[in-house]
Structures are given as C-alpha cells and as structure tokens.
Amino acid sequence: DVRNGLNFTERGFGVRGALGVSDRGHTAISQIKPGEINWEYIFGECGVRWFHTGGIFASLSETTAEVAIEGMAIAKKHGTIVSYDLNYRPSLWKSIGGESKAQEVNRKLMSHVDFVFGNEEDFDAALRIKVKSGANNYQKLDTESYLEMMQSVSVEFPNIRAVATSLRTVKSASINDWNALLWLQSGGTFIGNKMETLKIFDRVGGGDSFASGLIYGFLAGQTPQDSLQMGIAHGALAMTTPGDTSMVSLAEVQKLAVGGNARVER
Image 1 (cartoon, rainbow, N blue to C red):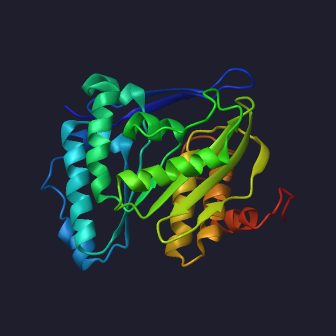
Image 2 (image 1 turned 60 degrees about the vertical axis):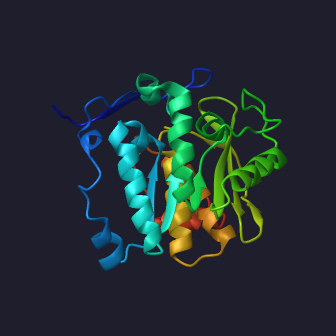
C-alpha cells in the first residue's frame, strides 16, 4: 500500500535545461493523518523553536495539508516560528486539482505562517501574486518588482512577518547568476551580494539549502543581512554537489558567506 517516494532528475547542461520527474504516488508520508503526531510534546515539552514545511508535503494527499495545518496551529500556540516554502510542483498537484487546488490549499495555510519562502513562479502559481514586470524567461530580474511582490504578500496575509525569495538569472543550465532578497514586517528589505556566473553542477536542492541556511542564521542570532548571506552561500554550495542533500560543512558556508573563494585548503 505504501513505498518510498522517488525523484528523478536529468541535470541539464548548457542550453538543455534540467528536467525533474517526481514519482511520489503512495509515498508512505502521504498516508499520514491528523492526530498521529504528538505536536504538544514536540512544541510544548521539547521546546522546538522553528517548524518548517512546504508545498511538496501539502500536495501529497488531502490529509497531508490537514496535518500541516494541525502542526502549524499548535506550533503557533507555543510561540514556535512557522515557515513554509511554497515549492510549487505542477506534476504533484495535477492529479488532485492542479493550480487552482494548489492556490486553495496554500492560501488556507498562509494564515498560520510567519515566514514564507518562494520564487517568482511559486508566488504566482501557489498564491496568485505576480511579479509585475518580471521577464518570463528569467533572463533579467527586476529587484524592485520582486520587493513589491514580497510586500504584496504581507498585505494579503498580514500575519506573515518575513518573506524570502531566491533570484536566479538563468544564463544556461550550467551558469546562473544567484542572489536573494529578504523582507521583514518589522522593517527593512535586504538584498544579498550577487554571485555572478555561478557554475552549476546540479541545481536540485539549491532552494531548500537557501532556506535552511537562512533559517540557521536566524536561529544562531545573526543579523538579517548575515542570515540572508548564509542562505545564499549554502544554496550556491549545494548546487556544486550531486543530489538535493547538502554535502557541505558549516565552516564552508560561513567562509563563502563572507566572500571566501575556492582556493584549495590543506
């Protein structure tokens, strides 16, 4: 009845873009139902400080979205920060209602979220919030338009305290410009230090690693700007290794975040 989910990725090279195929039908986690996790123990007794989930989990079945809401509500009750990565995947949503279903689910989830992650496609497809003047081919990205989009998220969902988005200018499948933006409800917009002509070995996992690097920065008590740089550095490094799981050390991320280079270390 259940099995491990799979994700196949053809990396792409040069003018041939990467192609991802999610094979998540009957994934074991898709069978989870509300009431099966002791959230009170996790957030109330263990004192977990940050709860992160996203659109891939919410898309796996009708019950996974319900479990996400259940966990978020109890996390908020105990003062735990809740973050959500929109991570819109058309291939996962198409069998349960497509883009309209994704918008229905994600907009419902947003009322429980403090910190939302996503790129321009995610905000459009998952929340119906568009970048006003972004180029559809992502050859050139207008920073001001992205900041306007991020502020629009907070207007529509006033409970959201922070919005973060990665900026990827696709020169080819092998070379991207890479950067990110952070908007805080408490005041301030933060623009990262752009990495130009970043050479991509495998781009899968770059967005997740951006999110986890940024979250690490906040949990470690770093400034918003430094936290953003940690996210950018971790995302960049993740794209230099195969697969979507980070293979780099904290020291490597910290070095790149402050402008380190690829000089050999012995």
